[in-house]
Every structure is written in C-alpha cells, then in structure tokens.
Figure 1 (spheres, rainbow, N blue to C red):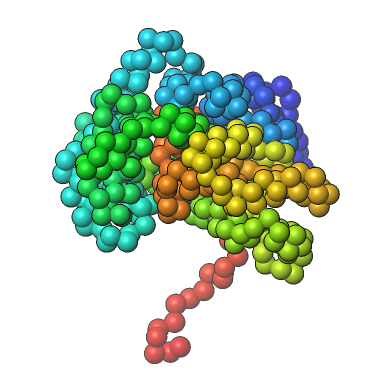
Figure 2 (figure 1 turned 90 degrees about the horizontal axis):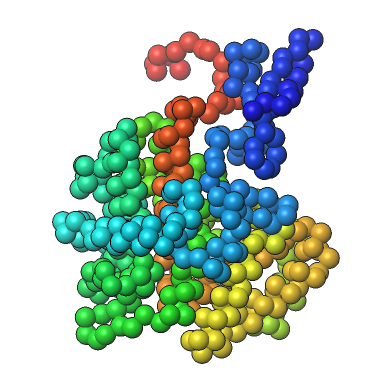
Length: 428
C-alpha cells in the first residue's frame, strides 16, 4: 500500500514514515510509530489534518464539491434511488438486486415497532422537553430492552442491532414529536414505505384518515438520502470513538445523537431558517449583505460555506429543486423562500462570496422544506439524526470489523503547572 515515504528530521536525526494511498483523495503519512521513534506527538486541534481511520464508505472532495457513497455520486442517488436502497448500499457495500432490496425493506419494516414498555419512558419527560433530549435518552435505553443484540463480537447480533436502529429511529422520532404536542402515539404500518410510515406516525391522528402525499414523501426520502452519511464528521467520529471502547451499538448511536445536537453540527438548518426569517423580505437583503461583509458586525449568513466543501455543496443542488417542488405542491408562497433564492443568486455572483467560496450548503434549503411540510424547528435535528443513523451504523460496523481498530486515545499538548508539592489547607 505504501508507494513512498516521508522523512521527518528532528535534531539532525531522520525518521522515515510510509506514505499510504487511498483509492482516491489525498495521500496520508502513517505516523503510528512517531511517538515510539521520537518521543513526540503531533498537534492538530479539531483533527483537521488527521485521518483517524481507514474507510470505504463515503468520499468527499470539498474543493470540487463531490460526495460519493461507495463510489456513487450523491446527486444520482438522491434523484434515482431510495433511502432504503442507499441504506443497503452503505451497510452492504453494493447496490441491491430487486429481490435483495425487497428482503431488506421487509426486514426493516418488521423491526419498526418498539417495545411497549418503552412508551412509558416518554411520560417521564416534561412536555416541553427538547425532542433531541428525549431521543438521546430513549435510544440509549434501547440496550435495556434488546439484550439479544448487544454482543458486538457476534456478526449476527451486530446485523440485528443495525436493522433495529434503522427501523426504530423513525418510530422514536415520531413519538418524541407526538409527546411534545400532546397527541397519542401512532403505531407503525407495514403497508407504507419507510418514509411514508414516518410521515404517517408523525402527522396522522386517530380522528381521521391521513393520506401520505407522494410529493412530500419523495421530498422527505431525498432529505434522508442527503443526510445519510458524511464521512468522519463530529458525530460519526463520536460514534466510532464510543464504539472503540467496546460499547454496545445503542449506546454508541446515543452518543452520536448527543454530538449532533450541537448547533455547530446538526442545528445548522434551524439557524439558517431563523436567519431567513430575521431578514424577512427581499428588500432587506442588501442591509444584511452589508452586515455580513462588515468584520466588526457579529452577524453571519447561516447556510453558506462549509467546513469541508469549498465549492457548491452537491447536496444543496438537489435540495433547491426539492424545495421548489414541495412549495409548489403545497401552494406555499413563502416570502422566506423568495429571500433564499435571492440570497443564493447574490452568493453565487457577488465577488465577496465567490472569493471566500461561501456557497449555499444543504442546510440552506432543508429548513425551508421541513418548515413547509409542518415540522417545528426543534424537530429539524431529530430528522437529521433519523437519517444519519444508517451512516453511523455503517461506520460502526466497519470499525468493529477493522483489524487495525484500537480504542481511541487522542494525545495532548500539556500546558498546565509542572509537578509541585501538596500544601495542607491550614498552611495556604
């Protein structure tokens, strides 16, 4: 695997380290023996230049605006595939045959119900509890109900746990929403699709029949696909780090949910929607553009730019088209969407934004779509977690199967006091 080597010179002594090639993307310098060789660590806050693992799941080229799942471009998957098919792809490595997809979908469908006693967990939360707080607690508690799928050394138990997590997450998310609005829980229906079932559990009520709108169902399915996996981001790295200790899969996914809850990660679409609402109308855009360009003004345009992408986020292109379809179908004439379209045109043409590569990202449009469908903003991150579960599960499975995997143990640059002697309290 190593085609060349990199030499590090320390105090006149040279140390050679293998340079490894991936199938695509930057080369990496294998520094696993650095400390043993030199007594030194590397210093890389945020791990922005560190590959923490080897993975064959997702590839991102931020400069070119490329996102691939197992080699397939995200726009092709979003336009032509389904979330169940993408889930199979991420978990198994290849696109399924028709029979394989039907069997996988049937398996997931059979696991959508949650243990009846789990419903009592919800009553322990305040009615105004944030849905992400509820989701964290309930998902973490799954290991108390499904003991038969917590042995991470058993491949069959790992597969069952993976199916259960993907299947039950929509049910858990819908129940969190229903609890917050004081409506009765709605049980899953096996005659509906994965996404249609989630919409039914979220928006139907016993008093009348609910018909899943195919346009809304398709839009939600695309949103799920676009959020399914995104390489070694903060929450995925959290899942892997938790899993490296041998923690059960339910605990690992609960850890990922907790990390995703952070506003710098999963809460970005909510922040983007709030910003568009603050601007309000198209005629106020110049005022906010001027504020965004003013270094002394704390205001920042949310939904533009990305930690990884230095080009147009490939997911945003699909999301823009989907937003148009949803608002047209629902007959929504939302001034917020007019603001979004005008802001996008400015961002793509204004030299300031072009130079800084502040392109619209996936969060820019997803909040508008979810709001139009009827989701309150506090549910946005829950939906992100629902979709990302398949990516977390696939990454966790890959990590468990990796012979090079070991417990995560980042190092530090210590800057505290050097050794000193304890002084009794009466002598201080």
